[in-house]
Length: 414
Image (cartoon, rainbow, N blue to C red):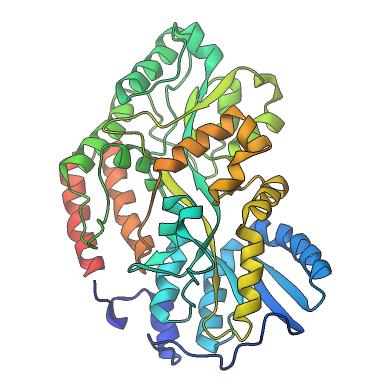
């Protein structure tokens, strides 16, 4: 799929205007890994704070290496990276999600992954794919994220149901029973509209066998599978099982705790939020894999670690990334942050192997699907967000909403 500066998002266009070309640059000779040197690292949000502690320990064990970590807020991360790319001042190592990788690979400022050091077989397939652009790996998976179904077991029993829903029909039946027999306000919390509504929709779309953009780079959001998924998603609002009006910043954990909302799709961090913020629910909730249509498939998220093409410390940076992403490093990172390991071998011991809830996440990750690393992915998903909102608000049929989205997205992937 050819890409040109004309079709790139604003951030890349600005960087190109500053003189970065698609072929990238070179930082000259690489400093040997055993020489005394400093590696610069940018990591985002809470990960940036925690990584600084790991860097201190790494430096203590490797006196010739100083790892300097700069925490960067997610609200400014993209612009900071774009500006650094334009100025030729990217750090040796940076944290990136899939939505960033497509952009910066397009700029030619990322070093391809050393596949002799990092083996894709060691990682969840979707995590590795998230770091690929046009078949070339640029990011080493660091941690993963997916969505599973959280549900109130005590209220399900009150509604006469004693097991987790495994199919779309069973989930819809449980949502209806929650309202009709357990007296909940809603049956299922899913986002009706607004930014990143698509993240709730992915579990329906992927489980139906649909996609937004296929492996050939073609828009396919108006496929029969996608239409079926959006009809199912919209049915929760048509039947009054889900709230059509959810305010920004809505706290689903609170309503899960008070029983207004008995089911929602959530990430691994919700386990901690529930254990710490809703202790009265202990033993009254559980997690389950995404209910299936054609299959049970959820979204794959998380972050990768990349090395700058202009770095003069690639060898030492590669060693540091190995330290962070091998079995021991991944298990240690989970203990520090509760971020789920991308390296599957880290799941074979300790809490990760013993905790039944965590194993639900692992099973979901085995089939989870990552989004394509496309430069305009944020713009593309915005069109899907708009289509979902039309359906949940009763302003268009699934067919019409997705037909419009299809035509818009076709212009973004050409």
